[in-house]
Image (cartoon, rainbow, N blue to C red; front, side):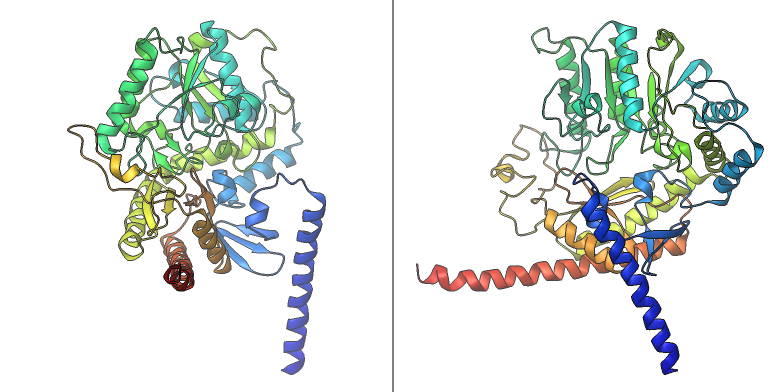
Amino acid sequence: MAVTESVAEGAHGGARAVHEGILRRQSARESAARTYARALPIVPVRARGLTIEGADGRRYLDCLSGAGTLALGHNHPVVLEAIRRVLESGAPLSVLDLATPVKDAFITELFRTLPPGLADRARVQFCGPAGTDAVEAAFKLVRAATGRTGMLAFTGAYHGMTSGALAASGGAGDVRVARLPYPQDYRCPFGVGGPTGAELAARWTESLLDDPKSGVPLPAGMILEPVQGEGGVIPAPDDWLRRIRQITADRSVPLIADEIQTGVGRTGSFWGVGHSGVTPDVMVLSKAIGGSLPLAVVVYRDDLDVWQPGAHAGTFRGNQLAMAAGTATLAHVRENGLAERAAALGTRMLSQLRQLQSEFPCVGDVRGRGLMIGVELVDPEGDGTGPGQSPSADDHRGALSGLEPTRTPRPADPELAQAVQRECLHRGLIVELGGRHDSVVRLLPPLTISDEQAAAVLDRLTDAVAVAARHQQDRGRRQRQQDGPAQGTG
């Protein structure tokens, strides 16, 4: 027995050494721009479905899913079989924009899923393989089609990392895009939330477009996310989205729906705009449409198709493996009702997570749609001067005559969110952080997650929040004890 235990310990020690060596070399050789690797020091070597196994032998439940790329989880059999068929067929793997049976099958399946009113008159543009490439292509398209240059985007938005996409995102430093308020309840820009806050946001948009002195000429297009992901998992109210669709249609402003993360069933509808019944003029798609491989497209109304040959291209727009994997993914989600499954399971998960708000004051808000879920962590004892809150926020919420204020948000607590993420990882759960101050714990599990796995995710997350909250309270108690004598001797 002692020999067996010694061998096992040696194997574990060897695995740990391999794990640490790879991480050490990554830190020494890769760019300082790396992100996920900093908060998630793991070395994946095998994966299936929701589960990842690291080089050190540990197993994790992956609720990051490649930032939403893995609609069916890791290495789903239908995806692997689709890739295997192409590899074994002898077909070319990259063909620029030439027609192939693989591409034809992908476009046919994609069009089958599009919102009513778009599929029967759609055109599709294959571009570079990242979502940000699709955003850039969409901007170029509507500018060419309208002859106008400006763009409208929303606070909290995230559309990619290339120059034009960044300019339309919430963290833009050099503002070249007019910014509009995105409605939300917990941190409503007007301090009221709910339908009233959404109505005020719509009125602001309408006024900006119609006021000749607003400083914003009629734009080439408007881009929005049906659910803001990086912005903190904020679903667009359906009535507001319908109102925005009407505002843009009345003024001939093409509406671009960024469905890069919300698409392929993620929110409980095949496309995020499906909840409101809105048909956009343009959709930018990536992530899950490639079945885990790089693929991005722009889908748009045929009357916008003013491209000249070569007006927008990309060397890797003919990725046959991604198209095959994407076709298999789109069909599997559609045929197996995984969007509806995401809606039902997501509702249950949100309901259970909202119980945390009554148990832990540090849980400021729980929100989401389908299997796109966010838990915002706050400082319950904050004085209103921390991240996400102005010093006079308490005084001014609801100050507008006749408007009822929503609950007062507490300051965001990014340190607590990081602590929760670490505690989750310690318990074998991978989660992402996002939101305005990186204080929102995000869950993006694959649509194939089982009820038992969902329960395990919630148990581990709840335990992580409890431990992190207790440590936060202990730190606060020690700090008050240290501050007490100093204040008494002043």
